[in-house]
Image 1 (tube, rainbow, N blue to C red):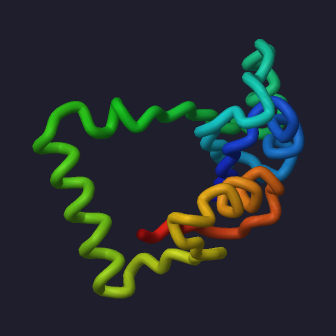
Image 2: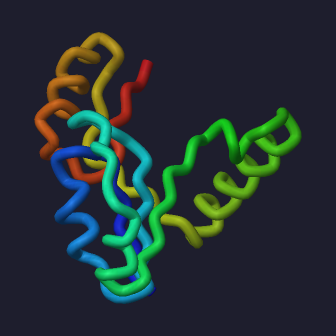
Length: 116
């Protein structure tokens, strides 16, 4: 199965769906270009029995115990090398405005860190 992660929303929704093979999944987790307008769910069928999910962090960290467990898993995967995190750029706290400009440029590929 192939997966598309879309954090942009309205401007990329159709092209993200079009990238999927039959039975692919689209994870729509943001709307920086605006919310996706209502659409006919029959489109998912026509494009090959696609799956669409709209996750929210609050549903995956319902209480403190779940938050701690998920954070522990994440940091464990990172320290073991099982999960590699790509850092696009790092900015000192004094240059936070530059970090925001980098984010707004939509040219970043990976995480943007602001460090004290």
